[in-house]
Image (cartoon, rainbow, N blue to C red; front, side, top):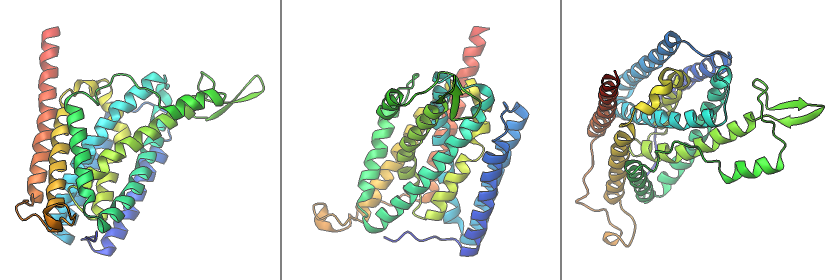
Amino acid sequence: MVCMAETPLAFEITTFVVLALFFVVDLFIIGRRPHVPSTKECVQHIVFFVVMALIFGGLIWFFAGSKPAIEFYSGWLTEYSLSIDNLFVFVIIMSNFAVPKQIQKYVLSVGITFALIFRGVFILIGSALISQFTWIFFIFGAFLIYTAVKLVFGGGDDDEYHENGLIRTLRKVVPITDEYDGEKLRTTRDGVRYWTPMLIVFLAIGTTDVMFAFDSIPAIFGLTKDPFIVFTSNVFALLGLQQLYFLLGALLDKLVYLPAGLSIVLGFIGVKLILEALHENTLPFINGGNPVAWAPEIPTWLSLAVIVVAIGGAALLSVLKMQKVDAVSK
């Protein structure tokens, strides 16, 4: 199987240029201003990038047809939902390391940059793997189903961030202060140079981004094999994420049914990947190395429908429950 782009080359080049401008302005110009954004500012940014994603999907439809456009919308919604789930962990990290609100925007911009880099690397690796080894879908599918089950039983519902071995080791061998010095990684105390807690925060967010990339990349490859659509859906899912962080704020922990909605989506995509692997089977111990004829191909429109219903239903149920709890408390 060869992963080929379905969109014209000129359109792809133009897209990369525009997305690069979006990314630089969003994270390195607006995101560099150390302030807590207002609700109006957050809403404006989020609406802008959501509208841009919807328009971009329409352009893909115009230049390449309905199939890749639906693949983009499916991938973008899935990655956006996973990115919101990622925000839960960012909230916990910011809280545990007592990151001042004025520099949280900057920390988020660095974290989102890490996320894009890691996802870009994983996309390249994933494209190379699936172009040579169709059976990798069995592994991707099984991993997504495992993640879905873990979400259902609360495996991803942890209210406390636990430092990994790398960070614990770093604390023992590197002199780190307990106080922040703005956005600086290094500071001077009594003539001695120290690392600030910002170093630990960046490492915590970076390693978290790696773990989330393990979920997001198999998920998107379960919806499309086009590297261009895989990458752009990830970029659009990350743009405006820092504004979403401040807009949702304390409401993130009120989205109680989001993990359930995500588990449905990831479980569905996992099954879809396994069915695709069976449909294009080359493993000698399965059906003698021949494709499994009974394995159905799940159409792209059905994937989009499942994603919209699962995530939309989870958000709606979360809002209804939040309103019910507020009514009772009054």
